[in-house]
Length: 333
View 1: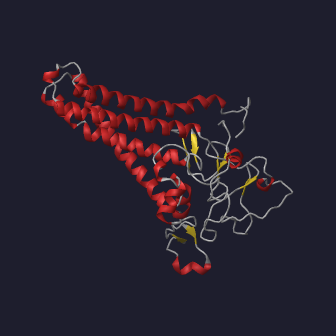
View 2: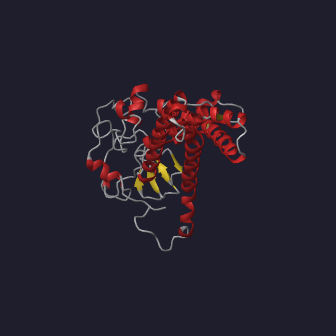
């Protein structure tokens, strides 16, 4: 992906359209927040009611709900902004050991190689690929530890922003679940008191939308929790789950379709539940659910069972030089 916009880029006219999913997501967040605050919380706070007529238990519950919901919303928005603005990481541009056309031939320990034993390389970027690196045809660069390209953040999800993406879907699911579980009282009040059509519609619509989104987001977040425990990305899961052509030696294990349909979900980067969680959320549990960068490594090398926690620059904390080498400030589609 170039640093300067190409004036002859055929897709340049469509670039503004790529921001539509972000605008839609922000509008949905704003709508649900407004419905919850103005149709549920504020009426229960009883702000215009005389002190002697205030129902204190209801006001207390509303204050707690207001604090918790706004905290979740702030964390959601912060995670969303970090997902959009954080570059997922790319192969260093000026490092000859990753340059496919470089005369310098270096011996780098890699887990993922071609069947011939040669290093993987990208024919579009002209770079050797580190482990867990894949080329994104939308972003037009190779992404470190690529999980997938997400149009909702107009960015790839990779090594440097996967934690923010993980927290984004977690806090989004929490916000929708919180709305659905706490708005029942407002729905019941609107029905029993026979309120006007518009306030009733907003309350019912908000709770219904929150319920539908909570099902989708909770399922999606649960899948990424499982991926984290298994030390895999979405791409790695799909690659390991796809049927593989059978070999002559494995003919007896193949199905009638001629391929081995057994699912292999083992990852060479698996270091147990705690180790896998630390690889995604960072080593300090205090910052696990805070959208700040605390993850060790540089995205270029990874520890495996053969090299447990001894390789410098992979399991150790990243140095500023590592971050500068694998991140860029801004990228263009």
